Structures are given as C-alpha cells and as structure tokens.
Amino acid sequence: MENSEYLLETGLLDFSHPAMADLITRRGWQALPEGDRIGAAYDFVRNEIGFGYNARDTLKASEVLKDGYGQCNTKGVLLMALLRGMGIACRSHGFTIFKSLQRGLVPEAVYGITPDSILHSWVEVCFDGKWVNLEGFILDEAVLSSLQAAFPERNALCAYGAGTDCLQAPKVAWSGTDTYIQRTGINADLGVFASPDEFFAAHQQDLTGLRGLMFRWGIRHWMNRRVRAIRRGAVPEIPGGETALNARSWPAAAPACGD
Image (cartoon, rainbow, N blue to C red; front, side, top):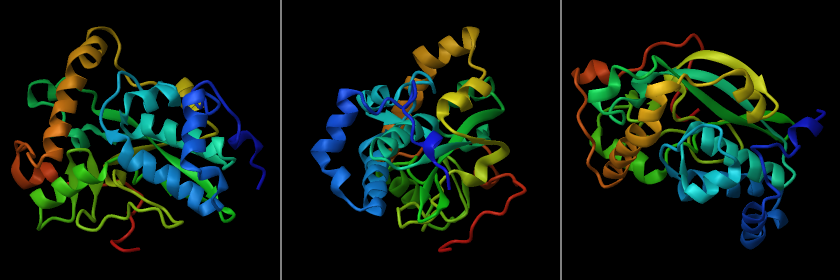
C-alpha cells in the first residue's frame, strides 16, 4: 500500500509545531511499537482531550491541543497530526450525521435553527496492512460513563453526542480494530480524503452569517456547559421520550455489540 500522501504535514496537520513535537517526545511515544503508538495517541485524544465544541472545525491540530477539548472533526485533526508525527499513515473519512445525535447538548431553545445534517468525520489509520476506522475517541470516558448510568437499560442511543446500538459496551478502546461511538447517527457518506484540509475544502458546515456568530459566541459555550454537567452526572431530559433517543436508519449495518 503506497502511503506517502497519508504521511504529509498539512496546514491543519501541523505536527512539527513545537507543542505537538514536545508532546510526542515527552510521552516517549516514538519509541513504542506501531500498534502501541497508535493506541497512545488514540487514548490521549479520547480522554485527555475532553469532548466539547470548538469555535470551528478548521482548527489546526496545535490549536485543538491548546483548547484541550474537541468534537469529531477537531479531535480527528489532532489524532491524525499525532499519528503522522510518529510516521503512521492515516486519512479522513467524511460523513454527515442527523442533528438529533446532538439533541440534549444543543439547547431546545435553539435546536430548531440548527442544520438538519451536521458535518462529521472519523480517522482511518493504516495498521497491519489494512485501513482501520477510528471514531470511538470522540466521547471521553466521563461523558460516556454518565450516559451509561443515565440509561442503564438502553443499548441504542442517538442523542447527547452518542450514536450507538451498544451503549453499555461500545467498542471504543483501541485494540487494533474499528472503534465507533457516533456511527448510528450517520445519514450520508462523503467519501475518503487524504487530509482534513481536503475534506473541509470540499465540504463546509453551513454556519455563516448570524447563525455562525450565534454558534461561535453563544451556543457552543451553552453546549459545553451541558457537556460539563453530563460529566458530573446531570443528563438533561429530551422532549419526546423514548422515540427521541433512537437512531434513524442508515443503509450500512452497524457492527453488533462485541464484534
């Protein structure tokens, strides 16, 4: 497999930035075997970079690191930069998700004006001669544990940032195979891109004008307060009862729990 384009530094994947290079050096990741290098970067992005909403998707990896939090697209940029900074080939896979996946995080007062489809991506890493899908890094363990505790009888959940049929035992830990946590919220596949720069050049979230200003300066901070409350165990109720918590169907079948 020719991987040269999947190892390049880009505008967003700024792995030579001093903060990025220092992180890799301080943690001693470069000396690890390949699988452990992937796992170290994955675990760092999953749990040491908390789930939350940045000002925009197109932050550089070093900027996401400085923020200390992120969502699917921004955490993915950081993970890809760390992987490439350690010589591991990776690429972006773009999608859109139903906005219902973010219900409970988006306040009901503004839920109606949010876009019906939200730009989403996961990371594909080349490991053991094949591409492995990595999406399970999006929710940090504290958020996921609170959702599990709030819905102990549920496996299917598409809300609060989760989209899974395996809530009580989602496949989110790195073990050399695919990981997912928002997959059942997907409604369109936008294809594979060599870098997030290429993905965002082709696809932009419609957050322009007044709606964009509202998100950047108000709504996302409101959402981040809700995420912090969920970490503390305070999961807000969603109007609509059980039906509001269920995923809509996507043509590709999700993996079974434990697969």
